[in-house]
Image (cartoon, rainbow, N blue to C red):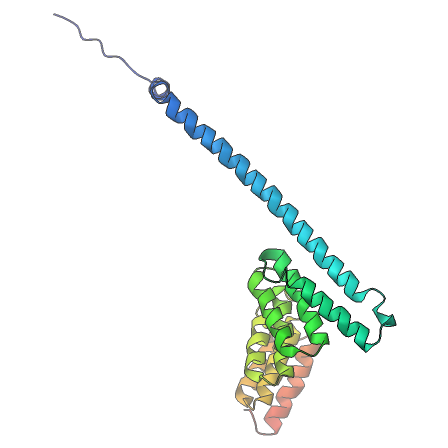
Length: 226
């Protein structure tokens, strides 16, 4: 009787056979993978270089704007501001940190020129290009200031609220107080009282909370809030 011999194949045997059968395909695959890795590294290097170049240019624009500006008359200051805004136009549309920095500087220049509409738009553009950046709450806060200057209390309240929701924002209490103050100005006394109360409860020892407490007492004493 013929005895059948069963070959026991290990995982390594199967793997070796697969590699031998598909050597050309695997070689091509790993070659493409290596090329892709090199491309990613090259892109990252070029991108970092472009970011640094953009930041250096923005720093130069800022320097040229402020260098010995105290020696200038109003016309000279205005000329520098216009020159800075013209130079920044190349960078305000960019994404990431370059776009954030460019829009923040442009917003400051517009605010100095009392162009609060453009300043507010630039601050919100800085938010859009850096939503996860530490600069986002500051940009929201400054946008709110611009809208207050324009008399748009709805947008001011909206942006103060956005700024106040960042727990790591150093001016969060200030933003909460400003939100309540704007609501009070809008004669939304119930909303203002709630906002003041929220600030008092969240940060009782903060100086803004103490001011909020005094405003809350005034609202209640005047019968505007319960």
